[in-house]
Amino acid sequence: MEIYTGEIYGKQTASKFVMYSVVKVSKTNITLQNIDNPLSFFETTSQKLSSSGYIRVSQTPYININVTSTKKKKVIKKPTRCPYTLDFLAARADSERPAIALPDLFS
Image (tube, rainbow, N blue to C red):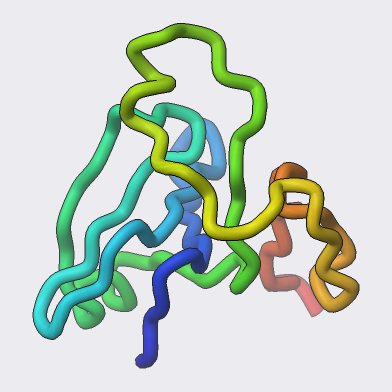
């Protein structure tokens, strides 16, 4: 399973769907950042990511342009793309949160 920086992975929890952005990819580890909580990071491997039920939501990065406090502003890195770049394949701009596309289990 190939994982690249900027991709977005998600996992369904008991109460909501949580999305994570891939911040860094090394030979053995992958660093993920929670989209809703930019101060939340964790490391995992690609095998653990796929076996834990994470699915790739989008290959287009998500850049939050609504920064609310100065502490969070220091943590957020400078984007490599313009947040308003429209990806015609994903049908959304980088600043727009990806739509949740859960597999249809009842068909």
